[in-house]
Structures are given as C-alpha cells and as structure tokens.
Image (cartoon, rainbow, N blue to C red; front, side, top):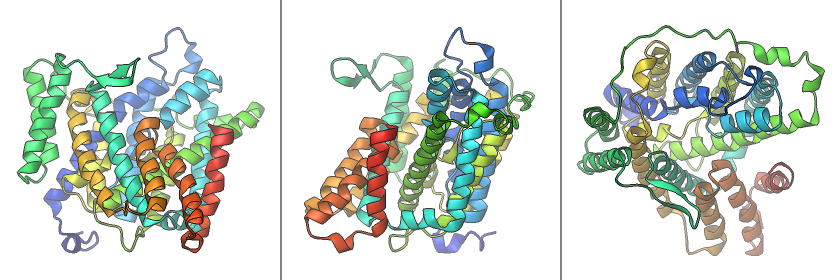
Length: 442
C-alpha cells in the first residue's frame, strides 16, 4: 500500500493521510445536508410534490456518488482530492432548470447523465488532459490563488462574517451573534495551531470549535448516533425514464446539457490544478495522471446521475485535507469511507455547522494565495489575465467564470505584446469558446 501510493517519495504516512482524509470529509460534510435541501426545493413553499426530489433519496445519492467518486480518484489517479455533487451546479439544477425553466427533475438528471457520458469520452480521448496541460503556468498559479480567495469568501459568508449590504454589496456581519463569535474563535485557535506547526492543525481546530460550540449551546448534541438509511428508490434510474419522453429532446435541454458540461469541465480543471499545486504534485507545469483524475470525475457524475443527484465534481475543500497533511490518494479513500459511514451515522453530521467549517476554508485560502509569488507581476501581459482570473472568482462567485475571463484576456495581451508563438493553439480555441459562452449561455 505504501509503495503504491508512494508514501516515502511524498514524505507522508498513514496517520497524515488519515487525518487529511477525515479533514476533507469534515470540510465537505455540509453537502450531505445542503444538496438534499437544494434539490428537493425545500426552501420554496407551495410547490407541487412532482417538482420536488425526495429528500432522503437525494441524501443517499449524494453520499454514494461522493464515496464512489472519491474512491476512484484515490485508487486510479492517486490524488488527495475528494468528489461530491457540486455547489452551484446543484443550484443551477434546482432553481434554474426545474424551478424557473419548468423542466422535470427527471429530465434534468437525464441531462446530467449525458454530460457525464460525454466527459468520459473526452477523458478517454485525452482531450481534457491536453487542454489542462496547455494552460500556461502563470494562469495555473492565478487559478490556485483565485480559488483561495473564493473559498475564503465562501467560508466567511457561510459563517456570517461577511453579509449582504445593499449600499456596498458586502459588509461585516453581526459580531455579537454567537455563531459568528464561534467562527472567529475557530479561526483564532486554528491560526495558533498552524503557526505552531502542529500537524493536523486544521482538523484539531475543527474538533475544538465543535466541542466549544456544544458547550456554549450553539451546536446541538446529537440525539442519537445511528439511524436507518433512507430508500433511494424514488430517484434511482429516473434519468433513464426521461429519454422516453419526446419533450426531453429540445433546445432548452441542449442548453442545459452544455451548461452542465461547461461548468463541470472548468470547475474541475481549476480544482485539480489548484489542489495539486498546493500539494506540490505539479511537475514541469503538468498534472501527472490528469487523464485518470478526469476519468474518475466524469465516471462519478454518471454514477451520481443514475442514483439521483446533480453533477458530481472535484471539491476544492480537498485543499483543507492537503493543508492537514494529505499527499496521496489514500486520503481520498479515507474520505470515501467516511461518506459511506455517513449513511448510517447521519445524526452526527448535524453538528458540523458553517461555524465549524468556515475557519478551515479561510485558513486554506491563506495557504493557497501563496502561489501569487510565482507570478511575474512585472510583465503587464501576464499580470492582467492573472489578476482578472483571481479577482473574478470571488466577485462573480464562480470559479469557472474567473477562468473564462482570464483566459479571454491572456491571448489578447500576449498577441499585442508580440508573444504569439508562446501561446498554445488550444488557448486560442478556449478564447473563442469562452467568448461564445458569455454571448450565448450567460
């Protein structure tokens, strides 16, 4: 096992990989609650039952898709990257496709399944890997830093540290609120642990924050430990039934499939590059075993769609596990195991609140922006696309949009500077695709 995952070469051990895998799971555990709430449209009152997916079935589908996807990523690609139904994509699925466009959720699952199958073919052909490896090093560093800012913003927002302000869009939250204070405590204790160089500081910080939250009455103590696993029957295989309905084959569904395809492609690319760069796994500006990582990602999407959930993708929260010491796919196997266990221990997951996970995301953001030092800011033709990539992610609340904007400006500045030959031909193709994306899909 140690030889297969190259423990000695990567300077790791079972303890670090286990803590890293568990830390990643804890940082991702919210998806087990948020995804079922989103896809069942639980927060939207007075809807016909036919528009709502079954909450329990989606919970099971979420856990199974995450477990299988993370396991494949760990065994095949050997990366410490876990997968689960992606945030943003699930919101698009529920609020845009089902609620706004009025497309049945069964059809939406059918669209996810098709996009996953297309991804598998693209991964097997090597095209996805070639695209990722064609991205210049400066933009890869920018993607990593941008994701760091993005997840910091997400963490701060989820904990109430940053709130909506109609006058200036965002502002400070209520620092007299108990949950906000708990998040601040979590950040402080995690910073102390990390500064002291304690291995697993992020994970330990989450445990301490949870315990303090329980003592303060801000986090509920689980009423029971084990509960029965809900039935997945209401959603399992529903995607296949959509293809027998002639209304499925429409222009609207084509747009839906293309959107699933586009966002998953570049969100995954950004996550793989960002986490691999943080873990020091990039070699000569290339991502080793990228094809296997992408195949694991696309296969997980197909599995998730069959069980009954939106697009499964690589999670940027994996960076918290890397920060805790994970360096190999063994950590992903550990994460997969916890997702399977969560099927039986769901009551325990209710204690994992945003006040607990936010400090981990914020500290990881600090670690990821370190890649800014690898960008040559003295060259304006590099600085512009890099800066736009970085800043657009938190401002547009989208990793994919940040990548798109930066990748549009990169060929422009390089051509004007007379460095045309240094731009990979694929980057020009991406330029056209991204421009068309903003024109027709956005």
